[in-house]
Image (cartoon, rainbow, N blue to C red):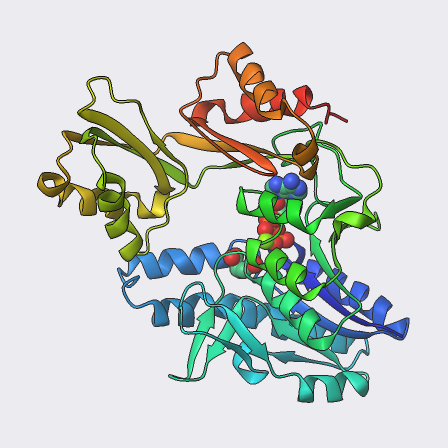
Length: 406
Ligand code: ADP
Ligand code: ASP
Ligand code: MG
């Protein structure tokens, strides 16, 4: 008898019929004698709707109320799933984040889980009751407020709960049957991976593969939680996220991702002297604006240069305002912002031991006439910033070039 965490995403609980399907899957595991904790997302589209309402009411300024509103979608599905289980004769109850509690810090809108109190949950699991937990939400004890874990955060709820319960496995049920070499909605020849390392999954998630929230992978890696991504609409085996030594044959590149979340900012005519980069990026850091890719071009006259970097689209206006407000102090001639960009990345732990991976990427894009605006690399990935209109073409050509096509 094992303890399992089963997480169902928005499309898997999109209506009562699908919630019924979820209940049947959970019942099958419970009937097999397992102790089951279920984590559910809001019905597909619900969180977007709630976020839209908050935005339209102009209230994004108070993130505590944002959390109060957007966390509510999960309450509905948790209750409905418990009811569906009960109607199949499975003892079940719903749990909201504050009832467990899932204790988080006070970073409303993207709070981090600090601990989960599992005593009562475990007692009831031991009695054969299924726990249906509302994902995405937590509780900040200092002010006694509801928090949310950032978009896609139910994955993190599930992995954190699996770690706290010492679960044998955390199954993430979604609308695709596993982690693919690229987003299967765009790259039709993408292949399902049988296994992927934590490290690669972490890079893929943080570079745009929305199939798992980045923090959930961090958490799984840290606590050694066995995560499986699988479909809730069939029986196909999914993708296991594992340690590197569990993978026998390692491809050089195992995934190609994209992120439309970035925007490019270029400062033209920045004085080319010591301290300028610090003067530009210091205030951005203080304003909690994350900067991702950075390039500084060679100064032609030794006096002035251009500095290009990326921030998230959400931060673009704030970053531009902040820098324009310091134009005199920073001494640049002009600020240009461009949100019409996409970051495309290739990822693989095999890169550590193989040369020429980046070159193949540049060559492939060149052959398609795609201009590279910014490049950044790390040990196991290469990212480029290109014009957004080329997203599909770039993904498909790179997928083919690295031999990933099915
Ligand atoms: P859920 O609502 O179940 O949490 P998400 O929409 O968050 O589901 O994540 C699943 C989606 O992630 C898929 O529909 C797919 O389009 C997208 N996706 C992006 N990259 C990948 C990838 N490499 N492998 C699988 N799915 C991916
Ligand atoms: N419902 C939340 C969202 O849409 C959390 C999740 O689905 O994981 O972001
Ligand atoms: Mg998700």
